Image 1: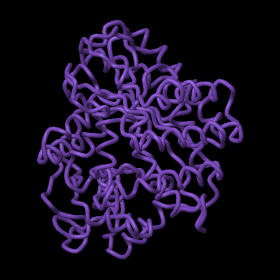
Image 2: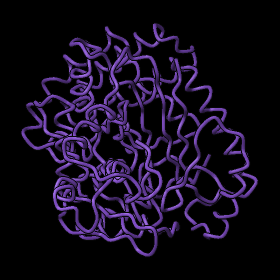
Image 3: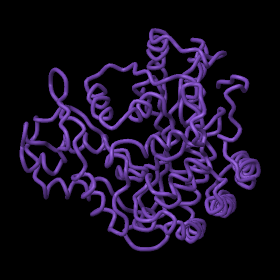
Image 4: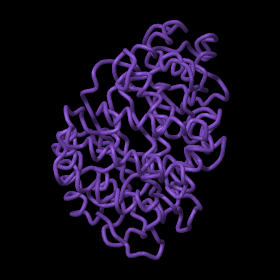
Length: 422
């Protein structure tokens, strides 16, 4: 969903209407055909990334980027992170080629300003620093501060690779919505572990291989959780959205009110301080941060940003292969289904499976075993999806360097290592 405008301009929203909107808009079924990727990057000094970048330099550099002709949408996060969101592509290679061209243009422009993109799931050197001063970010900070410092780090210091895939067929089967929804929540822990790339923050080791994922688990008690499992996806998501507290109530002027413990369902029923509208519901959905967010398609949000110019290609290719190739999807599902017992009853990302993935990476034996199988079947599927030889080689190299060895990129990182940016 895309939020636009401000609440109060449309007709009041009823509870039944809200549930219908969430069921119909957030899950659009059909054959899996499109793929997309959303890439978040930290922006650092080109040659000395440990030095803080002056906000005025970032402002000037970002202003210049707006003149670029890009296929991807270009946006900026509260801490100055840069995000490129690709348009839906009809194939893996179309998505990769289009996004790579946009990234090259952005990098060239940033290099001219002495800046570079860095791919870590969490900034290893700099403490959180909010640069965007807007009413919505003021309200978000106030809301998230109520449960501790994780919210500010998430807003200002984190970056990810988010893979976007079609929701799937209405009918049961490997390509069906129910199976893909369940696969996303079980495979998600494997992806966290395999691509963990954020072991430090503010110049110190954090004790996590994916500090970014640890932050999501430490946010407020409901906002970052997955919906209830064992329930039909549409019903589970609608209930989850309506029973999650409202982060803020948008206003035409002045600060946005930040209510305490007011769920969207309660807001509808009370109509206070004003009746909510459809646009308020659409905005409310954007303030939920579950590991898998349905937006018509499925947005997988659990993968750390990856280092290097092309590091993002491997998680994109592997994830698409495990979802959109029927043979690989069936094998992946059988492989990760036993992990549900390790997860227990707590929802992701706060259950033992996801916390173990963030802390231990692929040193966890169950996650390691699952990752080895999933990467192997992904490699077999990539030629069927039209992946180029270079993409297949990149996945194979990652498989050999990390997955087979029970390692992840976080295991390579050292705060004393040579500074590099791309």
